[in-house]
Length: 361
Ligand code: PMP
Image 1 (cartoon, rainbow, N blue to C red):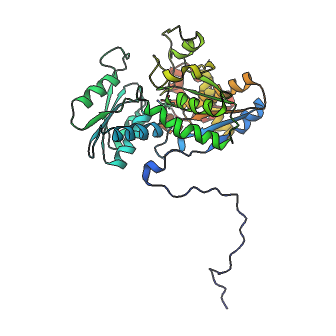
Image 2: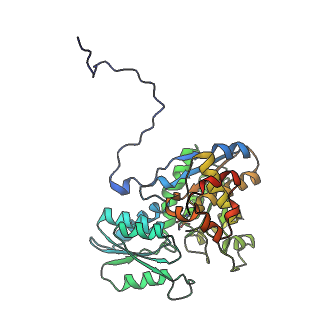
Image 3: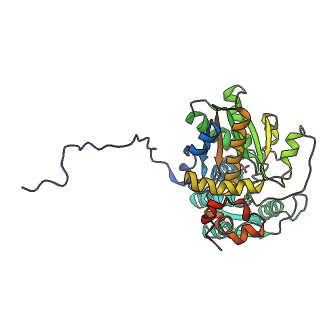
């Protein structure tokens, strides 16, 4: 007799331990609750646990899905937008991508102003997600043609439209006080010795720092990680007295020319600041790929370099946490192009045994 293909008695499978998440409600329900990845090689090298929050696993592909959801929810709660309305934002990319997804899921139109220095991949993706995109010249915040001011004016010119103002709308940092911070705390059972990340709006650093400092009674150390060209490193180092402009970085989405309203209330929580040269960030993009199998953008790599520096400063045996903000897919035509890196004098930043990964022209 033929044996049944579907025997009724349960077979015994050898399975790995499963902690499967329950179904969630729509796109917005899938935001957050990202894994915390222990970076094994770097942990071994430093003698501390280097943990990185896998924000590239958010459904829109970046840490900014969290802020996008919170600024839209905030506008809804305040009655600033009604069904069928328009969300307008100035964004270097990831907030726009998060907003474009959230707007599609909630039935809003989405208009994005961005500096025209951003990668083509991000602009293309925004348009594919149904957003109206305006790349505009990258000018300083003080200039009325800065992309944020253009976004505000656009929203003001429409009925039923809101400028979500991610830089100074503190619903952004609230996303991290209410989600990122609690997730990290829970994932490490409250054993968080250090947290570091770079800032764009400052929402991630400020919100996460606020929660972790409050929960740990001030014990969790917080370091700002900054790229060249940003004013915050010197500002923090000088105790909030020096704003010095100059320099630039190939990292996208981070670096700031002013103290935003998202960062301001939590400045006193920042224990120290680290400035990470682009050479180190590029090298870490390649190391993370080669040693950990993790494919992330330059801001994530910068964060990991900062986490390693923090581990060295705090001494061994600590749990240090940072953020993997987005995947490298959004920048691959740059980060994995020998020609592009050479044009930024960064070709030599790739260690020679890792040059094989720079496969694009
Ligand atoms: N990394 C990337 C790639 C980003 O797009 C952003 C946001 N602009 C950040 C880091 C910084 O996040 P936040 O705005 O919360 O400071």
